[in-house]
Length: 392
Image 1 (cartoon, rainbow, N blue to C red):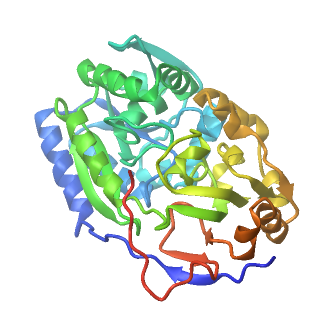
Image 2: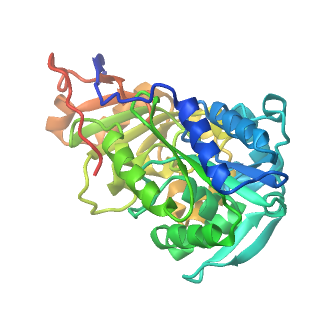
Image 3: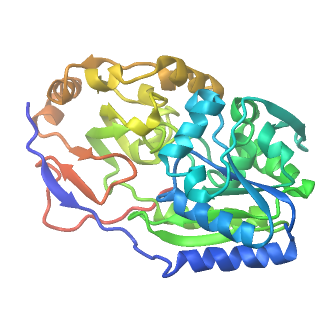
């Protein structure tokens, strides 16, 4: 059957900082007054996704550090993304606008990593060689709920220090140890090393505006990041239905989520069968892989059907390397492939019970980070506004 999609606007909380650049500048100035960096080499660690306009925040951070007398460089902190290679990770940053030309400082990525030490829980601590040669590290990351675990801190500056900074070595070590335990433990190692004067944490609203921004400093770092995670969880956009027959995702990619599509939106039961946290979606169809993902389709295995164009865009070497690093091999398994959207949707609907096929509760979205303007099937169309349902 052909679904007659109808547009629907979802409304979410829209709290937003009036002048986030000044908040960042003032926060950094206060942190650097307490922990001076004059004459020191500082590596600003930047990840691969999750922050709207990331280059802007890197630029402000670099400018403020240089004004404080630091010698600054930027390093990638993205684990195995980009295939884990230095050249590919530099290209990922360039695609995000994080370039030496824009920042006026070098973007340095090395293929080698250094064993920095051992965290209190026994986790090995790895560091990009270029970052290790610096005197200080300043990570920048968005705080948000993770797609694979629940902990006191999840995705944020701590994850960059623990998982991202040492390329595939650190990512693999932390995933094997368990992210909920390893991320705080490795972060404590770095905070105790004296190499991390501060870090930048942002919380976005559903409209990709900055709802909150904090400059984290030892010794309150983990407590403040945990509080920001609670704030981010409340603001995370979610679909307002606990159960759906079908979800069509126009685009997935590593720039959107570590699993290509945020499982907080699609349903954690796709990774953890038996998970009772909504939503529960019977079938998920994915149509395309984002160009910014550079062929990395990690998470495609959580779809039920994909199109030929998506399958053709996958770099399986990079995708499987990412999946092996995380320990979730099923994330890199290609689901059934249909010629195009119409055939993929028809195949997904054919899997459903007769009553669901007759009047499917279906939603089509751009991607899991853009949920304000969506499309729904007639069974879900309603004149009343949808109500925001917070995460978790």
